[in-house]
Image (cartoon, rainbow, N blue to C red; front, side):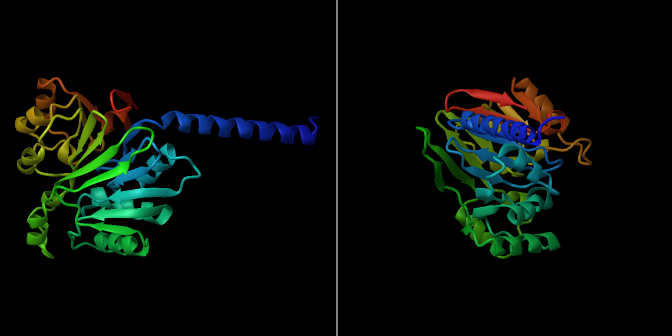
Length: 290
């Protein structure tokens, strides 16, 4: 029979080897920008991890699946998220953020303040207030945030929509279409950039896409309401990420959008086919992981 002390030493050795492997993997991921498009079903949730290890979450999807995405991609000892952005207050972008606020310390919350007359919105709003985070109200067109400047790589977030005058026009009233209030942002690291588009309608998106970016998060889960040739010709993406669930009731992505992306030679990556999708960059090159 194995001596109990020997058994304990072996168990400790396995534990330390496991911890060492985790630390090595974490160190290898530092120095790169990681954009993780979480598989949360029919919704959006994008975890951005900067070269210095800061986590920024854009939307949380429906349900609580985003928590699994965070736990799979953040060190188990890290219970802090630097910033959470809610692009617009609909369930398929907002619901998972309630669980994030309950399970992680969130330092900053970015929201336009646009309301939705639902019980879920009231739960989200209370959770945001109770978090005691810094509230970044009304992210607006023209804002630029440097979210990391470590390891020789600046990572910036530029807000492209909505403009302040639109937010003021909406006031406490709801826009006719909540999708119109979606925050559109461009994340840049070195010479690599990505458009994160929420559910913004194509008529608005084509007015704010003003330079090529290698990555386009296709608006509104691949709906024909979010993409057109004008947008693709301006953005000229290499990769199109479509966040959606399997066999969804909206028939996303629409055939017109898939055909259009294929006609432009753009590589399509879909959560319903690939699960969680990760795109990494060192500011010069791209790597796809899934």
